[in-house]
Length: 265
Image 1 (cartoon, rainbow, N blue to C red):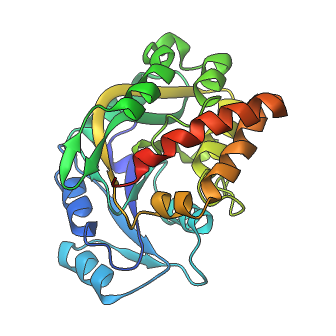
Image 2 (image 1 turned 60 degrees about the horizontal axis):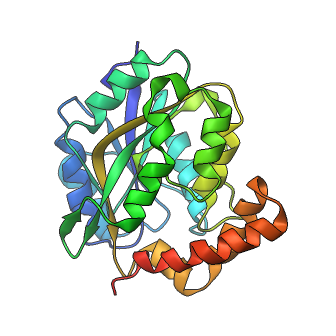
């Protein structure tokens, strides 16, 4: 049985996010006793002051910043069997940790846990919009614990996009590769990782409660990738994992129309 001492929130901090303090505070406010680390490949006074001010260990990765290597470093930095890679701009519900432990301990063979989520736009919590509704429909079958270990249900959930919000995920470290996130992907490295894990035995534990909020803003990495046309190219590569190339191209065209949801317009 896992308890709170078996889990770490590892916050990936980058440059000088004005939202880092809010993210850290939401983790400190967990109803279960949290273990928190901050990791960065862009060390600066802003990050150091927040870490020091809250008594949180700060781990610095040497070398150039990169999402894949930074996330893998975050996993390696945690000394616990369960790890949640928290994104610096996001917010966590006080019961995220306690509910995660409860469901992971109920699972027969836990591999990956994730929750439903909301969006933060202009400081307001958005719990429902067209994109969120679509993602929830994609995950509907995984609401039933009987389907957590169903490979076909997981593949179907991932075949039309990634409905799994990366910062809502808790990974079971001894069940995954050391470098699970590929540096060759800039946007869809999480989707690619979940697709690989979906082929493995074990439970994809889905909690349909909204237990975190993902911030959408102009400076986010997702927004930058969409504007630079990197996201659609990676989307097509992922769709080809599930569909014949002509079908994947059609799906990608339709899917790309929804990317505007990550802008502030």
